[in-house]
Length: 321
Ligand SMILES: Nc1ncnc2c1ncn2[C@@H]1O[C@H](COP(=O)(O)OP(=O)(O)O)[C@@H](O)[C@H]1O
Ligand SMILES: O=P(O)(O)OC[C@H]1O[C@](O)(COP(=O)(O)O)[C@@H](O)[C@@H]1O
Ligand SMILES: [Mg+2]
Image (cartoon, rainbow, N blue to C red; front, side, top):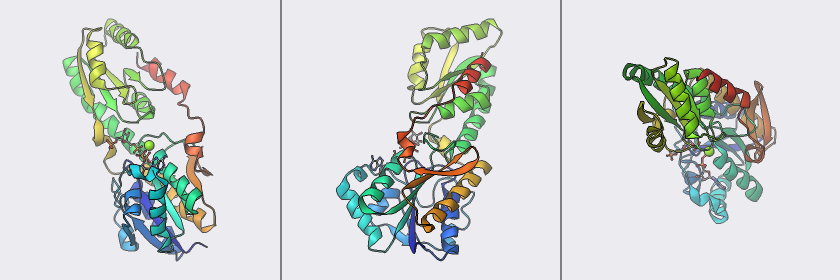
Protein backbone atom coordinates (compact mmCIF):
# COMPACT_ATOMS: atom_id res chain seq x y z
CA UNK A 1 0.00 0.00 0.00
CA UNK A 2 1.22 3.48 -0.91
CA UNK A 3 1.28 6.05 1.92
CA UNK A 4 1.33 9.38 0.18
CA UNK A 5 0.51 10.70 -3.31
CA UNK A 6 0.32 14.05 -5.11
CA UNK A 7 -1.78 15.19 -8.06
CA UNK A 8 -0.90 17.80 -10.67
CA UNK A 9 -2.37 19.10 -13.93
CA UNK A 10 0.00 20.24 -16.67
CA UNK A 11 0.03 21.67 -20.20
CA UNK A 12 -3.12 23.15 -21.73
CA UNK A 13 -6.12 22.90 -19.43
CA UNK A 14 -8.90 20.59 -20.58
CA UNK A 15 -12.54 20.32 -19.44
CA UNK A 16 -12.69 17.21 -17.28
CA UNK A 17 -9.43 17.74 -15.42
CA UNK A 18 -11.44 18.66 -12.31
CA UNK A 19 -13.53 15.46 -12.23
CA UNK A 20 -10.25 13.52 -12.65
CA UNK A 21 -8.70 15.36 -9.67
CA UNK A 22 -11.88 14.73 -7.67
CA UNK A 23 -12.04 10.99 -8.37
CA UNK A 24 -8.33 10.39 -7.79
CA UNK A 25 -8.42 12.46 -4.60
CA UNK A 26 -11.55 10.85 -3.19
CA UNK A 27 -10.30 7.32 -3.84
CA UNK A 28 -6.97 8.20 -2.20
CA UNK A 29 -8.67 9.63 0.89
CA UNK A 30 -11.00 6.63 1.09
CA UNK A 31 -7.94 4.38 1.25
CA UNK A 32 -6.30 6.48 3.98
CA UNK A 33 -3.57 7.71 1.60
CA UNK A 34 -2.08 11.14 2.41
CA UNK A 35 -3.09 13.46 -0.41
CA UNK A 36 -1.20 16.45 -1.79
CA UNK A 37 -2.01 18.88 -4.58
CA UNK A 38 0.66 20.58 -6.66
CA UNK A 39 -0.21 23.97 -8.15
CA UNK A 40 0.75 24.99 -11.70
CA UNK A 41 2.01 21.59 -12.85
CA UNK A 42 5.76 21.04 -13.00
CA UNK A 43 6.35 24.73 -12.35
CA UNK A 44 4.72 24.40 -8.92
CA UNK A 45 6.59 21.17 -8.26
CA UNK A 46 9.81 23.05 -8.90
CA UNK A 47 8.77 26.10 -6.85
CA UNK A 48 7.51 23.90 -3.99
CA UNK A 49 3.85 24.92 -4.34
CA UNK A 50 2.70 21.67 -2.75
CA UNK A 51 -0.14 21.53 -0.21
CA UNK A 52 -2.12 18.94 1.73
CA UNK A 53 -5.53 18.34 0.16
CA UNK A 54 -8.66 17.23 1.93
CA UNK A 55 -12.28 16.61 0.98
CA UNK A 56 -13.03 20.34 0.81
CA UNK A 57 -10.58 20.72 -2.08
CA UNK A 58 -12.49 18.07 -3.99
CA UNK A 59 -16.08 19.14 -3.51
CA UNK A 60 -18.07 21.33 -5.90
CA UNK A 61 -15.61 20.84 -8.77
CA UNK A 62 -17.09 17.97 -10.81
CA UNK A 63 -18.84 20.30 -13.24
CA UNK A 64 -16.21 23.02 -13.49
CA UNK A 65 -14.07 23.49 -16.59
CA UNK A 66 -10.38 24.32 -16.38
CA UNK A 67 -8.37 23.00 -13.46
CA UNK A 68 -8.63 24.06 -9.84
CA UNK A 69 -5.00 22.98 -9.35
CA UNK A 70 -4.00 25.54 -12.01
CA UNK A 71 -1.72 24.59 -14.87
CA UNK A 72 1.37 25.90 -16.59
CA UNK A 73 3.99 25.16 -19.16
CA UNK A 74 7.45 24.76 -17.66
CA UNK A 75 10.06 24.44 -20.41
CA UNK A 76 12.88 24.24 -17.79
CA UNK A 77 11.60 20.78 -16.88
CA UNK A 78 13.54 19.38 -19.83
CA UNK A 79 16.69 20.08 -17.80
CA UNK A 80 17.64 17.10 -15.55
CA UNK A 81 18.99 19.44 -12.83
CA UNK A 82 15.61 21.16 -12.61
CA UNK A 83 13.80 17.81 -12.42
CA UNK A 84 16.11 16.78 -9.54
CA UNK A 85 15.10 19.88 -7.53
CA UNK A 86 11.41 19.20 -8.23
CA UNK A 87 11.71 15.51 -7.29
CA UNK A 88 13.39 16.48 -4.01
CA UNK A 89 10.37 18.65 -3.13
CA UNK A 90 8.23 15.50 -3.26
CA UNK A 91 10.73 13.28 -1.44
CA UNK A 92 11.22 15.66 1.48
CA UNK A 93 7.49 15.32 2.20
CA UNK A 94 7.55 11.55 1.82
CA UNK A 95 5.40 11.71 -1.34
CA UNK A 96 5.90 8.41 -3.15
CA UNK A 97 3.34 8.55 -5.96
CA UNK A 98 2.36 11.18 -8.51
CA UNK A 99 -0.76 11.40 -10.68
CA UNK A 100 -0.02 13.53 -13.75
CA UNK A 101 -3.06 14.78 -15.66
CA UNK A 102 -1.93 16.25 -18.96
CA UNK A 103 -0.92 15.62 -22.52
CA UNK A 104 2.02 14.00 -24.28
CA UNK A 105 4.47 16.67 -23.11
CA UNK A 106 3.47 16.19 -19.48
CA UNK A 107 3.85 12.43 -19.90
CA UNK A 108 7.47 12.95 -21.05
CA UNK A 109 8.17 14.78 -17.80
CA UNK A 110 6.46 12.04 -15.76
CA UNK A 111 8.45 9.32 -17.52
CA UNK A 112 11.71 11.06 -16.64
CA UNK A 113 10.70 11.56 -12.98
CA UNK A 114 10.02 7.83 -12.81
CA UNK A 115 13.23 6.74 -14.53
CA UNK A 116 15.60 9.25 -12.91
CA UNK A 117 14.15 9.60 -9.41
CA UNK A 118 11.95 6.56 -8.81
CA UNK A 119 8.80 8.65 -8.35
CA UNK A 120 5.85 6.30 -8.90
CA UNK A 121 3.96 8.01 -11.69
CA UNK A 122 0.65 7.37 -13.41
CA UNK A 123 -0.41 9.47 -16.40
CA UNK A 124 -4.02 10.43 -17.12
CA UNK A 125 -4.54 11.76 -20.66
CA UNK A 126 -6.04 15.24 -20.33
CA UNK A 127 -5.92 17.40 -23.44
CA UNK A 128 -8.47 18.67 -25.92
CA UNK A 129 -6.22 17.56 -28.78
CA UNK A 130 -6.86 13.79 -28.58
CA UNK A 131 -3.25 13.33 -29.68
CA UNK A 132 -2.16 10.59 -27.27
CA UNK A 133 -1.49 7.05 -28.46
CA UNK A 134 -2.98 4.34 -26.24
CA UNK A 135 -6.38 5.85 -25.64
CA UNK A 136 -9.33 6.27 -27.99
CA UNK A 137 -10.22 9.56 -26.31
CA UNK A 138 -8.45 12.05 -24.11
CA UNK A 139 -10.27 13.94 -21.35
CA UNK A 140 -11.54 17.24 -22.76
CA UNK A 141 -11.84 16.21 -26.40
CA UNK A 142 -15.58 15.57 -26.26
CA UNK A 143 -16.42 18.85 -24.50
CA UNK A 144 -14.21 20.77 -26.92
CA UNK A 145 -15.83 19.06 -29.89
CA UNK A 146 -19.26 20.10 -28.60
CA UNK A 147 -18.08 23.68 -28.15
CA UNK A 148 -16.91 23.71 -31.77
CA UNK A 149 -20.26 22.28 -32.86
CA UNK A 150 -22.12 25.07 -31.02
CA UNK A 151 -19.93 27.59 -32.81
CA UNK A 152 -20.57 25.96 -36.21
CA UNK A 153 -24.32 26.18 -35.65
CA UNK A 154 -24.01 29.93 -35.08
CA UNK A 155 -21.57 30.43 -37.92
CA UNK A 156 -23.90 28.58 -40.27
CA UNK A 157 -26.69 31.10 -39.63
CA UNK A 158 -24.59 33.96 -40.86
CA UNK A 159 -22.86 31.91 -43.59
CA UNK A 160 -26.21 30.95 -45.15
CA UNK A 161 -27.68 34.44 -44.79
CA UNK A 162 -24.73 36.06 -46.58
CA UNK A 163 -24.00 33.11 -48.88
CA UNK A 164 -20.40 33.04 -47.72
CA UNK A 165 -17.50 30.64 -47.39
CA UNK A 166 -16.32 30.56 -43.77
CA UNK A 167 -13.05 28.88 -42.82
CA UNK A 168 -13.20 27.81 -39.17
CA UNK A 169 -9.79 27.23 -37.59
CA UNK A 170 -9.83 24.79 -34.69
CA UNK A 171 -7.10 23.68 -32.26
CA UNK A 172 -5.40 20.30 -32.06
CA UNK A 173 -1.68 21.03 -32.46
CA UNK A 174 -0.42 18.42 -34.97
CA UNK A 175 -3.61 16.34 -34.75
CA UNK A 176 -6.67 16.70 -36.98
CA UNK A 177 -9.13 14.90 -34.70
CA UNK A 178 -11.08 17.99 -33.63
CA UNK A 179 -11.44 19.22 -37.22
CA UNK A 180 -12.36 15.79 -38.59
CA UNK A 181 -15.00 15.01 -35.98
CA UNK A 182 -16.39 18.55 -36.12
CA UNK A 183 -16.82 18.07 -39.87
CA UNK A 184 -18.60 14.76 -39.40
CA UNK A 185 -20.81 15.93 -36.54
CA UNK A 186 -21.31 19.51 -37.68
CA UNK A 187 -22.01 18.90 -41.35
CA UNK A 188 -18.83 20.64 -42.52
CA UNK A 189 -18.50 21.38 -46.23
CA UNK A 190 -14.73 21.06 -46.44
CA UNK A 191 -11.85 19.84 -44.28
CA UNK A 192 -8.12 20.46 -43.96
CA UNK A 193 -6.13 18.30 -41.51
CA UNK A 194 -2.40 17.79 -41.10
CA UNK A 195 -2.65 14.02 -41.57
CA UNK A 196 -3.66 14.55 -45.23
CA UNK A 197 -2.53 16.57 -48.23
CA UNK A 198 -4.67 19.68 -48.53
CA UNK A 199 -4.22 21.24 -51.98
CA UNK A 200 -5.99 24.57 -52.07
CA UNK A 201 -7.04 23.87 -55.67
CA UNK A 202 -9.04 20.86 -54.51
CA UNK A 203 -10.88 22.99 -51.95
CA UNK A 204 -11.48 25.66 -54.61
CA UNK A 205 -12.84 23.00 -56.98
CA UNK A 206 -15.08 21.59 -54.25
CA UNK A 207 -16.52 25.03 -53.54
CA UNK A 208 -17.11 25.65 -57.24
CA UNK A 209 -18.88 22.29 -57.56
CA UNK A 210 -21.05 23.09 -54.57
CA UNK A 211 -22.18 26.34 -56.23
CA UNK A 212 -23.03 24.40 -59.42
CA UNK A 213 -25.12 22.07 -57.27
CA UNK A 214 -27.00 24.99 -55.76
CA UNK A 215 -25.17 25.07 -52.41
CA UNK A 216 -24.75 28.74 -51.61
CA UNK A 217 -22.54 28.68 -48.52
CA UNK A 218 -19.64 26.61 -47.17
CA UNK A 219 -18.24 25.89 -43.73
CA UNK A 220 -14.70 24.56 -43.99
CA UNK A 221 -12.93 23.14 -40.94
CA UNK A 222 -9.20 23.95 -40.83
CA UNK A 223 -7.04 22.21 -38.22
CA UNK A 224 -4.44 24.61 -36.80
CA UNK A 225 -1.74 22.07 -37.70
CA UNK A 226 -2.36 22.82 -41.39
CA UNK A 227 -1.79 26.55 -41.00
CA UNK A 228 -3.61 29.78 -40.33
CA UNK A 229 -7.19 30.06 -41.59
CA UNK A 230 -6.52 33.76 -42.15
CA UNK A 231 -3.66 32.98 -44.54
CA UNK A 232 -5.53 30.11 -46.21
CA UNK A 233 -8.49 32.47 -46.78
CA UNK A 234 -6.16 34.90 -48.59
CA UNK A 235 -4.92 32.10 -50.85
CA UNK A 236 -8.43 30.84 -51.49
CA UNK A 237 -9.62 34.33 -52.48
CA UNK A 238 -7.29 34.12 -55.49
CA UNK A 239 -9.03 30.95 -56.68
CA UNK A 240 -12.75 31.30 -55.98
CA UNK A 241 -15.09 34.24 -56.20
CA UNK A 242 -17.20 33.56 -53.14
CA UNK A 243 -17.16 35.94 -50.20
CA UNK A 244 -14.67 34.37 -47.77
CA UNK A 245 -14.23 34.94 -44.03
CA UNK A 246 -11.80 33.22 -41.63
CA UNK A 247 -12.87 32.52 -38.03
CA UNK A 248 -10.32 31.46 -35.42
CA UNK A 249 -12.13 29.83 -32.49
CA UNK A 250 -8.99 29.90 -30.31
CA UNK A 251 -9.24 29.51 -26.51
CA UNK A 252 -13.02 29.50 -26.33
CA UNK A 253 -12.53 25.84 -27.31
CA UNK A 254 -10.75 25.02 -24.06
CA UNK A 255 -13.41 26.35 -21.72
CA UNK A 256 -16.80 25.24 -20.51
CA UNK A 257 -18.35 22.67 -18.21
CA UNK A 258 -17.13 19.16 -18.97
CA UNK A 259 -19.60 17.01 -20.92
CA UNK A 260 -21.11 13.89 -19.38
CA UNK A 261 -18.75 11.78 -21.46
CA UNK A 262 -15.68 13.64 -20.25
CA UNK A 263 -16.83 13.47 -16.63
CA UNK A 264 -17.27 9.69 -16.81
CA UNK A 265 -13.94 9.23 -18.59
CA UNK A 266 -12.18 11.47 -16.07
CA UNK A 267 -13.86 9.83 -13.09
CA UNK A 268 -12.95 6.30 -14.19
CA UNK A 269 -9.40 7.26 -15.06
CA UNK A 270 -8.87 9.26 -11.87
CA UNK A 271 -10.02 6.36 -9.71
CA UNK A 272 -7.96 3.84 -11.69
CA UNK A 273 -4.79 5.92 -11.32
CA UNK A 274 -4.92 5.61 -7.53
CA UNK A 275 -5.82 1.90 -7.65
CA UNK A 276 -2.70 1.36 -9.77
CA UNK A 277 -0.43 3.24 -7.38
CA UNK A 278 -1.96 1.47 -4.40
CA UNK A 279 -1.29 -1.89 -6.08
CA UNK A 280 2.40 -0.97 -6.27
CA UNK A 281 2.49 -0.36 -10.03
CA UNK A 282 3.82 2.75 -11.76
CA UNK A 283 5.40 4.15 -14.91
CA UNK A 284 2.12 3.71 -16.77
CA UNK A 285 -0.53 5.76 -18.52
CA UNK A 286 -4.21 4.98 -18.44
CA UNK A 287 -6.24 4.76 -21.63
CA UNK A 288 -9.75 3.87 -22.69
CA UNK A 289 -9.67 1.50 -25.64
CA UNK A 290 -12.79 -0.19 -27.00
CA UNK A 291 -14.71 1.13 -23.96
CA UNK A 292 -12.34 -0.60 -21.53
CA UNK A 293 -9.80 0.99 -19.21
CA UNK A 294 -6.29 -0.12 -20.16
CA UNK A 295 -2.75 0.68 -19.05
CA UNK A 296 0.40 1.07 -21.13
CA UNK A 297 3.98 2.00 -20.30
CA UNK A 298 3.87 5.79 -20.22
CA UNK A 299 6.20 6.12 -23.24
CA UNK A 300 3.59 4.31 -25.34
CA UNK A 301 1.85 7.71 -25.53
CA UNK A 302 4.39 8.94 -28.06
CA UNK A 303 6.29 5.86 -29.19
CA UNK A 304 3.50 4.00 -30.96
CA UNK A 305 2.01 4.89 -34.30
CA UNK A 306 -0.99 7.14 -34.23
CA UNK A 307 -3.36 7.23 -37.17
CA UNK A 308 -6.61 8.96 -37.83
CA UNK A 309 -9.15 6.66 -39.40
CA UNK A 310 -8.94 6.90 -43.19
CA UNK A 311 -12.51 5.61 -43.29
CA UNK A 312 -13.71 8.55 -41.17
CA UNK A 313 -11.80 11.00 -43.34
CA UNK A 314 -13.23 9.53 -46.55
CA UNK A 315 -16.72 9.68 -45.07
CA UNK A 316 -16.24 13.33 -44.08
CA UNK A 317 -15.18 14.15 -47.65
CA UNK A 318 -18.11 12.25 -49.18
CA UNK A 319 -20.60 14.04 -46.95
CA UNK A 320 -19.05 17.47 -47.46
CA UNK A 321 -19.86 17.62 -51.17
N1 LIG B 1 10.63 16.29 -23.24
C1 LIG B 1 10.22 16.73 -22.05
N2 LIG B 1 10.94 16.47 -20.93
C2 LIG B 1 10.54 16.90 -19.72
N3 LIG B 1 9.43 17.60 -19.51
C3 LIG B 1 8.66 17.89 -20.57
C4 LIG B 1 9.00 17.47 -21.90
N4 LIG B 1 8.04 17.90 -22.76
C5 LIG B 1 7.15 18.56 -22.01
N5 LIG B 1 7.50 18.57 -20.70
C6 LIG B 1 6.81 19.23 -19.58
O1 LIG B 1 5.41 19.09 -19.72
C7 LIG B 1 4.81 20.40 -19.81
C8 LIG B 1 3.55 20.34 -20.63
O2 LIG B 1 3.86 19.96 -21.96
P1 LIG B 1 3.00 20.52 -23.20
O3 LIG B 1 3.52 19.84 -24.41
O4 LIG B 1 3.02 22.01 -23.16
O5 LIG B 1 1.50 20.12 -22.87
P2 LIG B 1 0.76 18.72 -22.84
O6 LIG B 1 1.26 17.95 -21.68
O7 LIG B 1 -0.68 19.12 -22.65
O8 LIG B 1 1.04 18.05 -24.14
C9 LIG B 1 5.92 21.26 -20.37
O9 LIG B 1 5.72 22.63 -20.11
C10 LIG B 1 7.11 20.73 -19.61
O10 LIG B 1 7.12 21.20 -18.29
O1 LIG C 1 -2.86 28.07 -24.78
P1 LIG C 1 -1.61 28.14 -25.59
O2 LIG C 1 -0.39 28.14 -24.74
O3 LIG C 1 -1.68 29.24 -26.58
O4 LIG C 1 -1.50 26.79 -26.42
C1 LIG C 1 -2.34 26.45 -27.46
C2 LIG C 1 -2.23 24.96 -27.66
O5 LIG C 1 -2.73 24.28 -26.52
C3 LIG C 1 -3.74 23.36 -26.91
O6 LIG C 1 -5.00 24.00 -26.74
C4 LIG C 1 -3.69 22.15 -26.02
O7 LIG C 1 -2.45 21.51 -26.18
P2 LIG C 1 -1.76 20.69 -25.01
O8 LIG C 1 -2.81 19.82 -24.40
O9 LIG C 1 -0.67 19.90 -25.69
O10 LIG C 1 -1.22 21.65 -24.02
C5 LIG C 1 -3.46 23.10 -28.38
O11 LIG C 1 -4.62 22.65 -29.08
C6 LIG C 1 -3.00 24.45 -28.85
O12 LIG C 1 -2.15 24.33 -29.97
MG1 LIG D 1 0.11 18.02 -26.06
